[in-house]
Length: 372
Image (cartoon, rainbow, N blue to C red; front, side, top):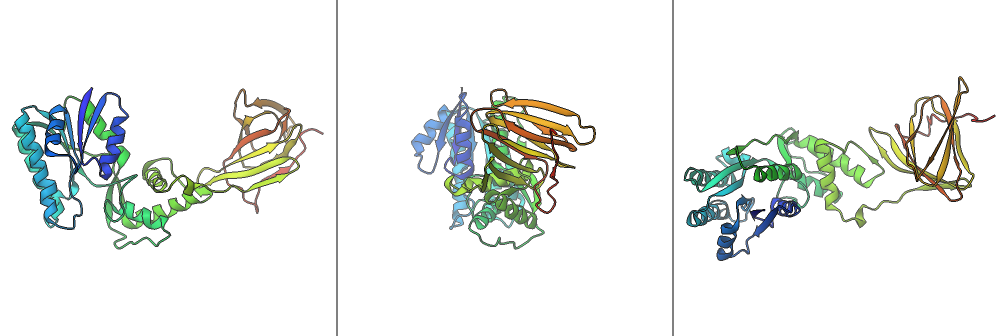
C-alpha cells in the first residue's frame, strides 16, 4: 500500500487523477486543496510516500497569484518535507512554457522547478518533472484550461469556433494518457527520470483542431460518425461526450414497420459502413436478394433463424442456422443471394452490419430467388 498526496485535487487534472488513483486498491490517496489547513497539510505529507504536486495558478485575475500559488506554495511543501526528514517521491506538473521569458506563468513554473531541483540535490525528494503541453479531457474548463475545452464548448452551444491563428501549431496531451504515465511513475521504484519525456502527445494546428471538433460534434449528435476509435479523434470525441448529460445525448431512431416486422438504421460511419437491426415474426422470411459488392454480417440477438444462401452463378445452396443461445456471425459474400427465416415461436431480432452505407440511388440489392 502506497500513500499518495495530490495537491490541487479539486482542479481539472487533480480531480481526474484522484478518481483514477482511488480505483487502485493498492493506493491510499489524500486530497490537498485550497481548504486544506497548514496542520492538515503537514500531517498528510508525513503520512505519504508520494507527492503529486498539481496545485498552482493558470490564469489568475491578480498576477501576484502566480508567485504565491506556483512558487511560494511549492517552497512551503519543500520546507515541510525538510522538517519531516523523510524523503519523498515527488512528481511536479510544470509547463512547456517555462522557457517563455515573457510569460509570468512560465517564469513562476520555472522558479518552482529550481526550488524542487535544489530539494532533490539535498536528497529531500526523488523528483520527476512533467513539462506539460495543453492538457485536455473531461472536466476541463472553457476559456481557462485549454483551447480544446473552449472549442468544444463553442461547438456544443452552436457557436462558430473562434479561430484566431489557424496555422499555429499546438501540442496536446489527453488526460487519460497523462494519468497512465503518472500511475506508471508512482508504481516504479527505480530509474526515475528527473524530466519526464512525454511521448503520448499530439501535434495539430489550431485550424485543424477546430475542424476536427466541429466534425466530431456532428457525429456525436447525429446518425453518422467519423473516425473515433483511436488517437486524437478518439480523445476529442470522448471529451465532447463528457460535456453532455446522458439525457442530452439521447437520439431518436426512425423505425420502418410492415407485415414482416421492423427495420431501423442505428448508426452510419464515414469509414466502416453502417449498423442496423431488423425483426421478424414467426415463420416470416426476409431478404431474397444478392449484392454485387456489399458485405453484411448478421448476429441473432433474440430467437432462432435460418439463413439460406444461393450462388447466383453455380446455384449452389448453403443453409446456416443461428440463434441467440449459440451466437455466431453469419456473413453474406457478394454474388450469393440470401434470406433469413424466423424458425421460432417468438419475435426474431437480428443485428446487421454492412461495410458500406446504404445509398437509395445505388442500393446494390438485387432480387433473386433462393429456392425455386
